[in-house]
Structures are given as C-alpha cells and as structure tokens.
Image (cartoon, rainbow, N blue to C red; front, side):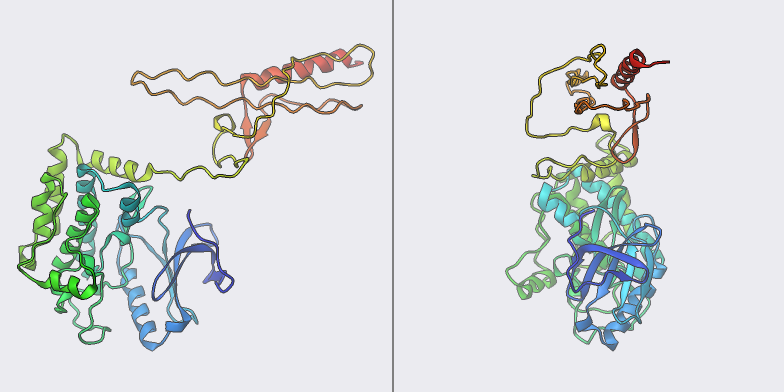
Length: 417
C-alpha cells in the first residue's frame, strides 16, 4: 500500500481507526490510510479544521447519508463516519491501486478492447447508482481506482438525489471537474439528470483511450466557453475507430442525444465481441493489465527479501563475497572438539524454455549455511522439514535433507552410546 508518512500535526487515531499514512489530499481535507481494530484497511477522509463550519458540516453530513445508500461491487463501500466530531471524518473501503489518471500518465492509454471493458464495467456500476435515485456528478479519471479486483468508483461527495431540487451550493455556483463536465452542468442547469454521468463517462473513456479530454484550454474560463458552445465538437483525435461512434454520442452537446447507460454496456460488449472475446475475458484482461505494473526494486544494498514469498523463490542480491568451496568433512579422530560440516552453495539450474520461448520460473539459489567457529559443545540439532525462513515458513528440500543426514552421521560417529 503506497502511503506517505504522517506529519507531526496529523492524528494517529480516529473513531477506532489507526491512521498509518497519507494517501491523498484536497482543498477540503486530507485522506489517510487507516486500519480498523480487526485489521481492515480503510480510506479515512478528514475535514480540515480551518474549513469546518456549520455549512461544511451540513454538506459533509449529506455526503455521509448519500454514501450510506450507495452499494454495488464497483463502488467503494461505506464503513463508518462522524460528522459531529471536532474533526469530521469518513471511512470507506480502501482500494489498493492507482487511479485511472495516474495509470494513463505513467503507462499510456489503454488498448481499445480494455477501454471498452472499462466502459461496460463503469456504465453498469453507474446504472446501479441511478437505480438508487442518485447521480455521481463528478466522475473523472482520478475518481476511478484500478484495484486488484478491477476498477471501482470513489468520491460521491457531489452526489445528489435526482428528485431533489434542494442544494447546499450557493446560487450561480457550479461544482464538479470542468474537464469531464457536461454542458448543462457547466451552464448551471438544475436539477441535473442521468445524462450528466453519461457525458462524464464518455470523457473518462476518451481519456483512457487517448490521454486527453474532450476540450482543452489555457484557463478555466476558456474551457467553460468551449464546453458550453454547441457548435464546437469534442476532440476525438486518437480514438480507435471502433469506439468513435460510442464515445462521440456520449459526448453529445444535447443531453437527450446521449445513449442510456444500458445502451453503453451493449455497445461496449459489441466492440469486445467483435474482437473475438467474451466480456468476462476482456474484464480479466483489464484487471491483469492495470495490475501488471510493479514498482522498481529499491536502490538499497542489501535489499530486503519480499514478504509472502517462499524462501526458495527469493533472489538476494549482495556484494560478492567469495568463499572457497568446501565439502562436508568428518571431525578428526580423537580431537575432542566437535566440528560442524561446511556446505557449498549449489547454484540454481538454468531455466528450461517453455514452448513459447519464455523461461519457466525456477527457484532461486539454495542458501549457504554459514561456517561457525569450532568450539567445544554439542552439535546443533537439525531436523528434516523444520528449518524456518522468512515469516515462519518451513523450508523443505532435498538439499536440506542431505544436510540433516550428514549431521546425523557425524554425530553418530562421536556418540558414546
């Protein structure tokens, strides 16, 4: 889990959640990586003391009530909250993965089939939210987390009930992210309806496929001007031909011309199946693709072996310290000083190639048993299958059995009984 260290002014505990580090921040507050008493990871959002007032608490309480009503496999789950605390906080499911914006910036746009899979997944998720009488209103790449089990939508802070005309926003104030904002939302039209989320999803898919948004400008005023002008089409440069009709219709200026979310799912399925894949296969490929990137190894010498990896599969890189090879030796007769046999490191065999040319994964080098200083006393007892490495995991191998057998024979030669 990637998190920055806590600063001295950060709390270390809120509502029973232990705070472990910082994972994000915004104008209203800070987001921490937390852990419940039972070990459940959580994203804990805390409102800054400097912006806590009666209106902020009211908006935050509304956000909590909205989140309590939202559910679905592609939605980050609500865990707990307290809008009346000195520092109001909210805890939701923690998704261990980058957001879509960061992934595209780091690894480039998604392939066409994976963009279609993302579209089907998110459209289905948003359709479920709409059935609950809610809109997201701020869907954007930064609010889509690419976790180990697939994408999930977060941050329903701007979500509103579709049938409600009440708003805590001041008159003539527009909330949302302009780069993914529908024209009617940019114009301040109220109440908003489901097509605003369809437009935002179209902008998200455009970004996923190309790395750019429908409209781009040097300042926010010019950007709003482009979004709200009916005669300025969105920039679809770089969109795969198969996705142009769908994304173009989702970004239509007029809300009634945009497809409904179930139609988006159907169109995405057609693109995927046109490539000879099933929708479930495409989703698995999407998850594998977004989870494949791993951070570079730390530039620390010697590196720390990774957790949860069997000892035989670890590869340790250290400065070369050659030792002369030695073979097991029996103690000299009548020396009176027990001597532990020394062992030679056995390198791992060369990997045999797979049929497709890729090498098979092979276990790393067998560990070298250190040479102890000879001193009077009993030999250490080594039992087969009970050597331990790492986090308490047993090591069992043919090499370990040979070591145990050699030690037993050496001990038997000196035993008096």
